[in-house]
Image (cartoon, rainbow, N blue to C red; front, side, top):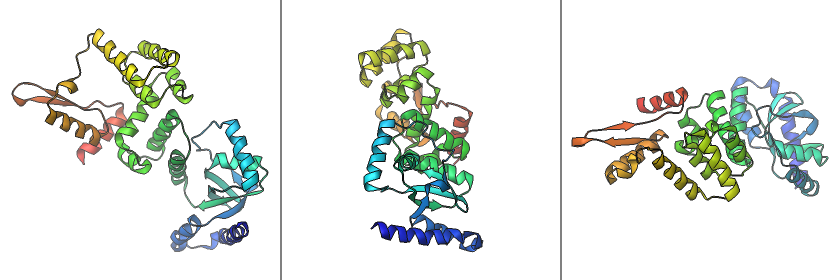
Length: 295
């Protein structure tokens, strides 16, 4: 099996060596051929991808993977972008690449792609967010980078990563949390459910107090939500309009929220009159909402 892969790798290297001679008309078929085959690429030809969203690697897990690679070889190929002859850049698979180098491999199996910088960024971020065990803050940062660097709307981003717009919005809200809360999320001291609950609190002092209680007392998400609700009642905030809505109006509110990827409120007045309230998180978020409404 190893010999067969190596022979295929040699064939792909021959294609790569002659790539400069390919015409623009042949690029599409060339990309398809490269994407569907595995090449064996020397590790000395590969440089780390500067757009890699993961910045921390667990040392014990890395060492364990390295030992496994020494015994079984690298089973899952990494993905590379060809820069020029004998020079490649990682798109995804940095942990596997690091472990392979540590295991003493001289070459690694790889999928080779042709991409400009923006396409490379998008491929790297989307592939890593699907395959890597990123914490919630890393996911949120990756979503934000896809929006800013790849000019994606929330709608197109949700399609790229296979998540709902509401899911994308929930992650992006984490970036507005205080640094102490974000650090707790990074270290997995609190869950995504805890984080979503804390993101709905406007009072930073109360947020940090709750954070300490969650960690010290190991509070459940439901317990935290109740504490937040009780705090809102004591501080004189009006009860949520959501709880008072008739069933048919609540159904409309839910469909609005799902379609817009944002919180939506329906406030009923007398004689069937009322208001629809849609909050936004930033100017970019407002523009996103306007794009959806205009469509």
